[in-house]
Image (cartoon, rainbow, N blue to C red; front, top):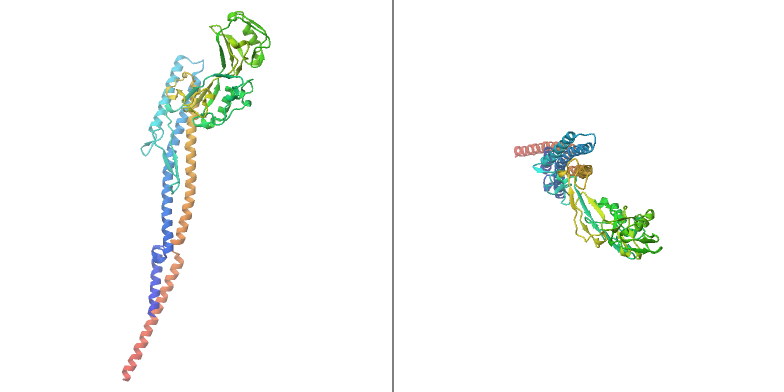
Length: 460
C-alpha cells in the first residue's frame, strides 16, 4: 500500500513539473536518447535563427547600396540628356556654358553619393569595401562572396582600347593564321575558332581576315566584354612607282585581273590607278598615290587585299594583307592564349584607358564622344544594379527557405520536448486521486489494526 502511495506521488510530481515547465524532456532521466536529440535540434535552431538575422542584416546592406545606385542612375540619365542637348545647333555659347555647369554639378553629386553611402561605418560604393562574406545558412559552406564595385565617376564610362597590328602573309599560308581553339584569350576568356564563312568578301584567307576575327570576338562579347571593329586595309608600296609594262593576265588584285597597263614613272598619267579602280567594284580595293608617289591600295571594309606575285611585285609584293582591329571594352583588356600573334599581337599587352566620366566634358573627349561615354556609364551602372539585385534575390530565397526549415525543425523539437498538457493534466489528476484513495485506505487499514489490538488487550 505504501509503495503504491509513493509511486503515485512520484508520478503526480512528474506530471506537475511537466505542466509547470511545459517540457516533457528536461533531464537525462526523462529519456537520454530523446534529450540528446532535443539538444541537437536546439543547437540547429539557434544556428538557423542566427543565420536568419545575418541574412536580414545583409539584405539591409544591399538595399542601402541598391537605393544609392538607383539615385546615381537617375543622375546619369540626366547627364546623358545634357550631352544630347549640348549637341543642338540652336544653342548659344551661354547655353552651353550652363549645360556644362549642370553636368559638372551632377557629376559631383554622383561622387558624393558614392562617397557617403555607408552601412555600419563601411563605405559601399567607393571600391574600398573588402569582399563581403554573405551568410546563406548555418553551415560553414553556406557563404556567398560578393564585392560591391565602385560607382564613382572615375569608375564609370571607362573606355579601354587596344589596336592590333596589320600584317601580311604568304598567299599559300594565309589560312594558317585563322584562329584555332585556345589561340587567343581576351581578359582570360577564349575566342572561338574562325571559319571562312565569317567573312563573305575576302577572296583569299577569309578565315584569317580581320573581318572573321572581329566576328569571332564579337560573338563572345558577353563572356569577355570586348568588342572589335575592323580598320580599313591599307597597303603602301615599298618605293615610288617606276615605269613598267603590265601585261594582261599577269597582275591581279583579289583574284581580278587589272588588264594591260603601260605604267609611267610615279604613275604620272594615273594609268595604274585607273586600271585598278576600274575593277574596284569587284575587288573592293581603291588605288591612290601617296605624297612620295607610292602606290596605296585601300579596302575600306577591312577585307584582305591579295596581290599577285607578278607585275606588282615591285610595288606591293605577292602577299595577302590583313587589316588591324580596334578592341574596346569598359574594363582593361589583357591578351593571352597559345598564339596571340594571329591577332597581330605578341601577348601580354594591356589596353590603354581613353577616358572616364570623371574627365569628361559635355563636348566629349579625345577618341570618344560624350554620348558614347554616357552610354557606357549607364550600361556599367545597370550592371551594378543587376548584380546587387541578383544577390538580393538569392538572399531572399535563402531567407524564405531558412524560415521553412526553421519551422520544421522547431516542430520536430516540440514533438520531442514539449509536454502534452491534456495528457499531463489527466495524469496529475489520476495520480493525485489514486494517492488520496490510497491514503484513505491506508488510514482505514491502520484503524482496523488498532481496534483488533485493543480487543486483545482487553481480553488479556
